Image (tube, rainbow, N blue to C red):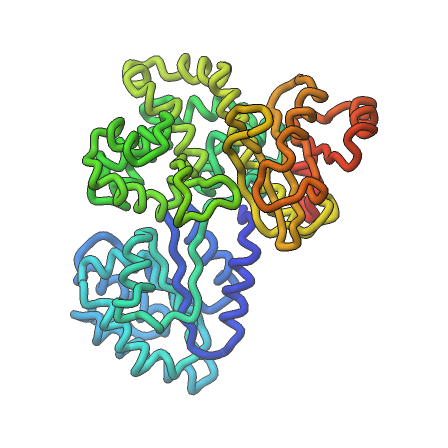
Amino acid sequence: MFVGRTEELEALEDMYSSGRFEMMVLYGRRRVGKTSLIDEFSKDKRTFYFTASQKSTKLNLEVFSRQMSSFFNMPELPAFTDWRNAFEFFVGLTRNSQSTGNGHFVFVFDEFPYAAQADPTLPSTLQTAIDHGFKDTSVMMILSGSNQGFMESEVLGGKSPLYGRRTGQIRLEPFDYYDAAKFLPDVSDEERVQYYATFGGTPYYLARLRPSRGFKRNVADLMFRKSGLLYEEPMMLLREETREPASYFSVLQAVANGSSTPKRIAEHAGVEASSVARYLNSLVDLGLVERKLPFGDNPQKSHKGMYVIADPFFAFWFRFVGTNVDVIENGKGLETAEETTSGEAFSTYVGQQFENICLQWVARHSGALDLPFPVTRFGKWWGNNPVAHEQTDIDVVAANGRGQLLIGECKWRNTFDVTEAIDKLQGRVGLVPGFKPASTRLALFSKRPVAKTVRTKIGRDAPGLLFFSTDDLYRKLQGWE
């Protein structure tokens, strides 16, 4: 089942339809769905598909040569001894195909970093092949790779021989909460929130779920067993993406445990203070960590920045799995999983992720009728409330360039005092710098719908107040499948 990726498919189709040479650079961390996207795009197109492996250039070229013979319907070629000769021969065959009207096809070079690490001259060799061959053809080339650092520096970077040759790039990210839910068509909306808070939006993880077994069983089977597919996933990804996986693992654990500043992260992770910025920057690039600022703060000047785990799966794993490794190793993982997913700490954690889901919903609805005005900027706010003389925060903040502001409160509880929640929300009007109270609208996001009678009563004192429940977050978007 292929899900989502509408914008990415449109970009690929638009590039393919140009009828001239194109080079798309497609990258993203492992398991994010690059191969599935390429397969979906190319399923009705003539495609030469080569996937490099972590092996020698000689062995990669043997496979490349065999696939070239098959693609161009030729007797099997002897293996080329270097990439220069292989590309020159490939370009020649492409030109011959083009002369017969069959030269418009897709050339996928998947896991390009593997081949380039075996032969560091590959990027410059490919650059020469593009400049003196491919650019005069109608081939659409896709260079794909999971090593994001390599793809950004050695393919997209200004010092790369390939710099300036690409005609487009896609950094593939995990799904948001809404597209992730399409893997779970037969579960309740509340369970969808729990699944997203636990497994995030990585397609490979979501495809391994068996909803008929229930949420708790999926968590136990995939993460709280030594044989579970996702039990060792964080370290496996760090081994592939970093040179010091143990140090990065320790930094992630420190952030997950609540350390939010470089100084405290270094102390709790046991790494040198002079190195922590490098670790954090790399984790931000990988999409695993995010530096959050109060809405409206200048990133270059603010001293309120705090680091948090950005990916829900990693946030859950380091919060609940990583701290119980010894128990899982001793065969008590299933009991621990049951205790974890039934506890107050897990409910609190899901509530935090629910806030992020509400923000994603607002971003998706930026031009929809469910919001009182279009919004272009989103985030959270925290700081001092001078009236209440206390530190406070606002779960959802959205605004536009016309001075209009929406602030929201998120409640992941079965029951709560609605009047009290609205009073607190009204007390936060005027706290976000640069926005007037008269241009501020309020929204309450709740786990379950607020009763109509309560909404009517509150509406008399707070006209224009918006109410959204979990059901609204999943049902009101057009195109739900």
